[in-house]
Amino acid sequence: MRKKTILIIGGGVAGLAAGIYAQKNGYQSQIFEMHFLPGGLCTSWRRRDYLFDGSIRFLSGTSPNAAAYQLWKELGALEGREVYYYDELTRFEDRDGRAFSLYTNIDRLEAHMLELSPQDQAVTRELCEALRGFTRLDLPVDLTLTEPEEGLEMGQRVMPALFHLLRWQNVSIPAFAARFKDPLLKEALPQFFQFSPPDFPIIMMMMTLAQMHNRESGYPIGGSLAFAEGLAKKYEELGGQIHYKSRVSRILVEEDKATGVRLANGSEHRSDIVISAADGYATIFHLLGGRYADNTIRKYYAELPVAKPILQISLGVGQDFSQEPASLNFPLRRPFMLGNIAHERLVLKHYCFDPNMAPAGKSALTLWCEADDYHWRRLYFDPQAYEEAKQEAASLVLRGLEERYPGLSQHVEVIDVATPVTYERYTANWRGSINGWALSQRKLNMMMGAGMKKTLPGLENFYRIGHWVEPGGNVELSCASGRDVIKDLCKMEDRPFKG
Ligand SMILES: Cc1cc2nc3c(=O)[nH]c(=O)nc-3n(C[C@H](O)[C@H](O)[C@H](O)COP(=O)(O)OP(=O)(O)OC[C@H]3O[C@@H](n4cnc5c(N)ncnc54)[C@H](O)[C@@H]3O)c2cc1C
Image (cartoon, rainbow, N blue to C red; front, top):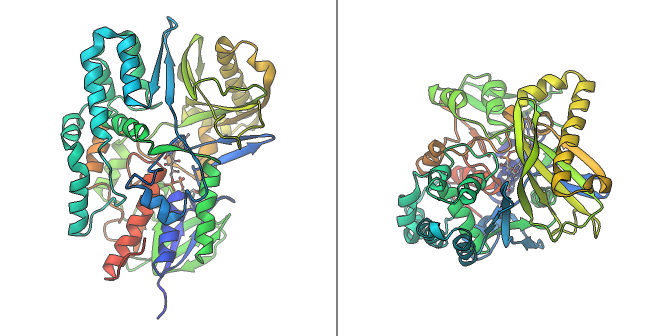
């Protein structure tokens, strides 16, 4: 019998995962990726002796004890890969020199918070009680439940933490943090996730910390590109084909059925099914010309906030930062402006726990700063002005780092600046977004409800996956999204899904 064919647009982690499951389930698939590398946003880049990472600081489901590990097992993603677990996820310093460490062990965190602020005992205990409750939440890998037994399994897995889910589902981090009397705790908690929207749901923080306490969420040694390359290798071993430097310019449609793709070089490729794992906006409004966007979809793109674009400043320094916190958030004595955005703090991350990132005794440092994508896009039209602005950004960040680490500049061996334009050029993500939609309360409710649809109204044989349809966008959700679609296809054909 002829195998059904699937064309996948985009070789980011979602596209690669969909490809792996397609091959495992008897489809013949191909991936068209516009870049010369797999991974999309899940990437790292080498500059001389240093490897700078652009994505995974922590990945969910990294322990075999977690139900979500099933995903990594099926994809072979963590085979032979060590995982680093943070003891102190981040440290936050205030202007008075006080510091709050976000420890991942709940008992240690509780003791630290009580020591910092005995007057906040009640709210600290409430937070830690909730964290302990979430350590009992172990969500399965299926995003969409199609069988009654899956619903039953979900119910059983959610039940131990149900009280806490209901109790906290509508509370934002800033609203919760406002209950602390201690100014340090009040200021620090809302900055747990850099660039989070004002109504960022506290249960996301609780679930993340609970997973870290359980040692179920960590950093895969080797970095993000190595992780994505592992997926690409697995896909090719299963007989899948990746065509790099192959930008799709159109999804071909006949009688409201997707029939293939046209590439930017004019070649056309036919298939039974088309899956877009590429940018959501471009897929709907460019590759399909907006023909299958109903009011709901248009409303999403008009109203929902997108994850903030960033500048990533990466530094290779001839100094050992391994004794520093893995992530340090500190205030600047001399704040600065970049475009229209004021920067009063810096968040410095090092990767000294991964020997692949820098030679011994040296460190790969990265800083993410919120960026104005219009500002950088405008500058990009003038190559000299764009380069000068990148250099200015790097020198302002270095000036800030000098306040905390005097003399650091003398040890800087490599400087690399990625702007929102860099993200758009290499991954085509709309408005330079780093993980699709910003995770607001409204988006959380969507995730807990029906989610966003992976099909488009009126168009057959077409699916979309990845972080533009899985609000909260991260590597795990994107991969699970690819799995979900292939599982759905198997179900429609009435055959068992092979994980
Ligand atoms: C700074 C930063 C930090 C992050 N931290 C974490 C973290 O700690 N943990 C975590 O889990 N996640 C993290 N993420 C998020 C995570 O990297 C993304 O959500 C995930 O990689 C998205 O994968 P995707 O496959 O859905 O989309 P993408 O990575 O955007 O992949 C889309 C792919 O499609 C290709 N493409 C686009 N248009 C076309 C076209 N027309 N033709 C052909 N190919 C096309 C692109 O080149 C790209 O390869 C972070 C991201 C960033 C940027």
